[in-house]
Length: 286
Image 1 (cartoon, rainbow, N blue to C red):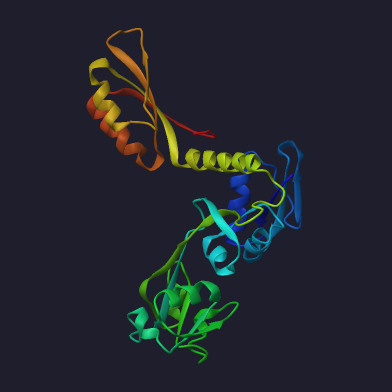
Image 2 (cartoon, rainbow, N blue to C red):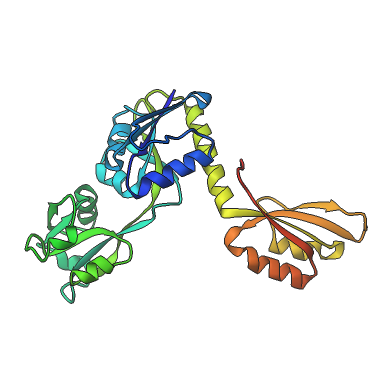
């Protein structure tokens, strides 16, 4: 069986399980379950702490896993990113007391608190900045007020917590993170799963991503306007064009980005298209 690590809690957990379910895999009903076997797909899921997943995959104990890009890089193990999954987006940034810092270079010789010490040390080393990194497991934003650090490096979403602590963001983002599918690198590759099994998993997850990002758009249009309409709905390769009973008209079907649906419908209507319909995509293989 292919052995897959899935986050057991936190912001990654629910979204990861939902995506796997959409991809056709059985998922646990009780959050206390630590292992879930899906015999129909010859796959076994292990629900683990997100921070530990890269370690298990990097050591070859499990074949692949879903975790955050930031957690993967921080773990500094022999594992690589296979596929970005489009959820749990976050930004890893520097923050300090208002007015104290504006550039990374000003951190030379300072104390930096973080929960991602491996990731931060690599970032500072690449830029030649020597600073003392203080590892904390949580409540990093309190470290400056408590005198443990001069500045922090942490995951930032809205920034409201930092403002409440009297701090502000400075410098360029250290890393833009999201949920990713990972596997072991180096000799051995995956522990038990074959390359084909992993390819099937990737293909299914890619199908979910496409289904979430695109819709099917159908419309009727005069034959002499097809080329103009095709510039609005080019599809992934090419739109499908079918004849209608009225030989002057054709029916067109194409995949379009979901976020652009209404704009494209308006432009098609202005062009002369009619009977414009939009359908959701539940699954696909591209």
